[in-house]
Amino acid sequence: MPIAQNIVRIQGQIHQAARRAGRMPASVALMAVSKTFPAEAIREAYAAGIRVFGESRIQEFSGKAGALDLPGVQWHMIGHLQSNKAGKAVELFSAVDSLDSLRLAERLNAAAQSLQKKLTVLLEINVGGEAAKSGLSAESQGLEDILLAAPRLANLEICGLMTVPPYTEDPQGARPYFRKLREQRDAIAARKLPAIRMDVLSMGMSHDFEVAIEEGSTCVRVGTAIFGARDLTAKP
Image (cartoon, rainbow, N blue to C red):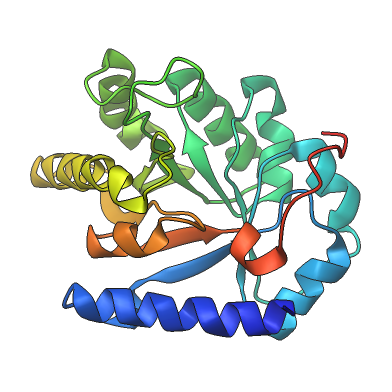
């Protein structure tokens, strides 16, 4: 099925899920996860109305960014980011949705300052406590360190949380994890910490985004359902 048709179908599902949850469909952003897909596919999604794209590898995206002069697009870094690549990430992206350490926050802030840029960031929470995944523990000192350091990270705009829950075949299996992230967002917001906003909950992917919307997601990250199956043999 063509990319444009996939997008129309997904937008319909977003609309229905939002209505079921008593929410306005416009309160949910659709991010097209374009990692591993070529510039031509991204341009096709752009022509169909997508303006928010997610990439996960600095090297891959830098190789195709030159062919993607698309007005009004937001490029989000959604993969694990090593602190030594912070400078390149700030050059390439308008947002980093996978902030998981104070050290990385400081590196991003310094790079953004040198480029006279304000960088939007989300705190990545490892809501399932999986050892193989990056992200901050919900109860970690690392999370608290970032929250308290926010006022001095003047070139970062911390505006919410992101998670990738443990995979389950049944989308309903992700519901407790999405709910946990929403509750954590609410708890942080209630503290009214300086320089911290908690407007964004980025959660939900191709197979479970409707459940995520029902649990409060404001941004769903959809790749396969838009672009089709990825070539898993492709080089990173």
